Length: 421
Image: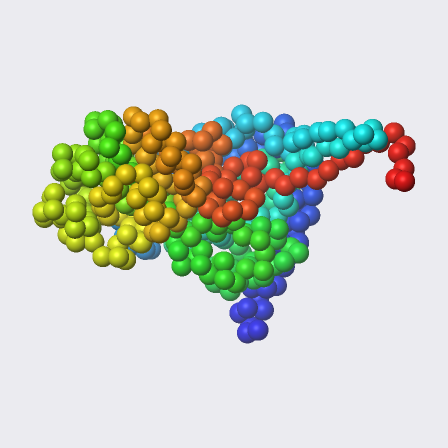
């Protein structure tokens, strides 16, 4: 272990041990106390909006070579700061997830068994570029009785620190330990490695960023990971789609924000309607600056579409680029999604109930949409107030991860003197 790694390990050990002590406090904090901390944090964000915007401007000036999508993820505006504050207040309004009785039953011997929700403990959040994740993750962790250690990307250091200062104001106002919400004390990448190996100190790692980050986390972690590697989402326009609805939904699913993980990256369109509808869809998106990569059948309909390669259909563009494929029915659409998708979010546009059910039932993905934009895969839109990320694995949680997914459970067994024979 080199000197830098030793230093990172020492810093992580100090932060994680403080977080564990704080977690024991917030796990038992009454809901009104946690809610007070959140309300005060939201007020601090509004009060300090100018300072947060100045910090964000400095981050943007320090990273001039970003792609348009990356710059959009990094950028804060007055409306985005207000959305962060409003999102915190939405979380305040949600029921406290800690202590919920998830199930209860009585055994023949009279024992009453209850499954009760409890916090996970200490969450390690590793993310890139989006400074709003600082608030989203911290707020959800605090409300669900967890402590969190946040390690954002170096490009958003100033923005994240300004937001974190507001969160600390909330903790102080409520008398909760400041160690419940910590930012990594160093930008050294070795700190990430220390987090990934902190078994016994960190209970769950949540990575939120590009494929490279998530792949590293999955390969190196000695701590359980809640992650998704990509958001390679599909919109399938079925033969029974309403044409106007299809046009509206696809424009939103692709172009509302191209750099989010819920953005549609591939259009699948039924051959039965492709000759009439595909040119309209292409024109709509081209007018907004979208580029295309299309299979031979699509190019036979719209001749100037660039040809798609095999790799194009496996690419999460995070940009104004759309892969296009003509398919023959639901079964072929599902086969394509299973081959190339990332089990994030898929949508079908159709007025045929049976086709919609076949599509939704045939998906392995975490979220299936019917006549709705894939960009609705979002914790706020699901009514979670915010999200800590989107989970596409098969264990513990899938889709947007909110308060309930940041809890595990324990059992309470209530007897009247029973002994086991």
